[in-house]
Amino acid sequence: MSSEESADHPGGADGGGRGGASKEEGRSASDRDSQHSGFNPMETLEQLMRFLRPFQQDEEEEAKPEQLLEDISLEGVVKYMQSDKCKNIIVMTGAGISTSAGIPDFRSPGTGLYDNLEKYNLPEPMAIFDINYFRERPEPFFYLAKELYPGKFRPTPCHYFIRLLADKRLLLRNYTQNIDTLERIAGVPGDLMVEAHGTFHTGHCIGDCGKEYTQQWMKDEIFADRLPKCTDCEGLVKPDIVFFGERLPVRFSHLVMEDFPKCDLLIVMGTSLVVQPFASLIERVPATTPRLLINKEKAGEGIPRLRGLGLFTGGFDFDSQNKYRDVAYLGTCDDGCNKLAEMLGWKDELDELVTSSHKEIDGQHESSSSEKPSKGETKSETQKTSLPKSETTSK
Ligand SMILES: [Zn+2]
Image 1 (cartoon, rainbow, N blue to C red):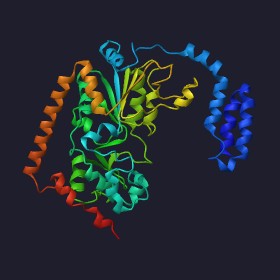
Image 2 (tube, rainbow, N blue to C red; image 1 turned 120 degrees about the vertical axis):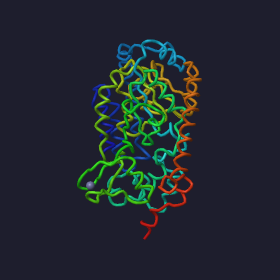
Image 3 (cartoon, protein in one colour; image 1 turned 180 degrees about the vertical axis):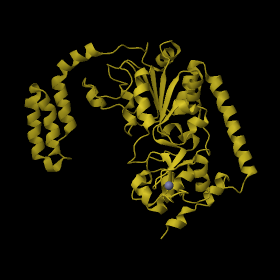
Image 4 (tube, protein in one colour; image 1 turned 45 degrees about the horizontal axis):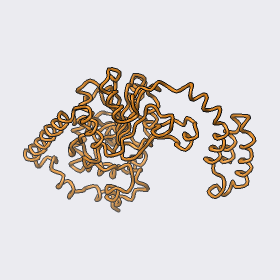
C-alpha cells in the first residue's frame, strides 16, 4: 500500500507527469509483496524529475541566492571570515569533535564502550538513553556516566578554536549535541552555549518532587557507586541530559528562532547530521549564508542523486553545478580547525591556548587526586577496577 502511495504522489502533483507515473504505479502494485526485488521509488522519482527538468531549471536560475563567498573553498571561507560581512558565526558540533579527547562516539554501536555494557544485556545499545528503560533499570546509564564523567577529559584543539571565536567576538552561539561539557571546560562562555541534548551541569529528581540537584552532588553519588536517589522522595535523580523520549531544552527552541536568522556563517563539525531536530538546523540560516562542514566524511547532503537532476532536496550542496555557499573540509575536526587557524593567522594563539589550558587542567587533576584520594575523586585507573553496578544487576 505504501509503495503504491509513494509512487502515486509525485505523479499526482503534476498533470504532465501522470503518464509516466501510472506506468510505474502499475508495476509497483504487482510487485507490492516483493518490494526489494521490483519497484524502486528512487528510480521512479528520478524518471519523473528527468521529465520535469526543463521547467525546473528555469525556476532555479531565477531563484538562485546571492553568492557571498568569492570562491567556494576553504580559502573563500577564510576570506569571508576576515571581511566585515561575517560577524555572527554559529558553530554546530557533534561527537566527532570529542573523539580525539578520548571520548568514544557512544551513540554509534560497535565502540569499545558498548562491549563493556554487554553484561547488562541491553535490548539494544540505544536503550541506555531511553527514558522508559532508565526508569526500570538505571544502572547501565550510571555505569556509563561514571566512565564518561565530565572532568576526566581534556578539550581538543577544535574546542579551543570555538573558544577563540568567542574571544574574538565572532561566535554567536555554539549548538552542541555533546554532553561532555568540554566546550565549557575549554572556556566557551555558558551563555554562548546551547547544549541541545542537555548537560551534566544539573540534575533533577524524576520521582514525585522534581527537586534540582547540583553536578557535584550527583558526581559524589555516582563515584560512591550509589544510585543517586532524591533526598526528599526517594525518586531517581537523573542528570539533565536529554534521553530518547524526552523533549529538548526550552532554551534550544527559543534560541534557534532568535539566532539562525542572524547567522553570517555556519560551521558544522564532527556530526553526521542524522539526529533530528538538530540535523535540520542547517536549513534555518538565511539562503545566502555560507556553510562549512568539517567532518571525516560528507554529511547532511539530502539526496545528491536527485540534486544532480536539478531538484532542490534540502541539505548541503557541495558538488552540484548550482553550488554557491557550501564547503566541505574532509578530515578530523582538529586538523580542520588547525588548518583554519593557520589560514586566519591565529595558529600561534590557538597552540598557546591549548598548551596553557591543558597544563592547568592536568595540574588540577593532580592536586585533587593527591589532596583527597579517599573521597571518591580518585583517578580513572581506580575507577575502572571498582565497577560497582554489575553486582546490583546480576541475577
Ligand atoms: Zn524527589
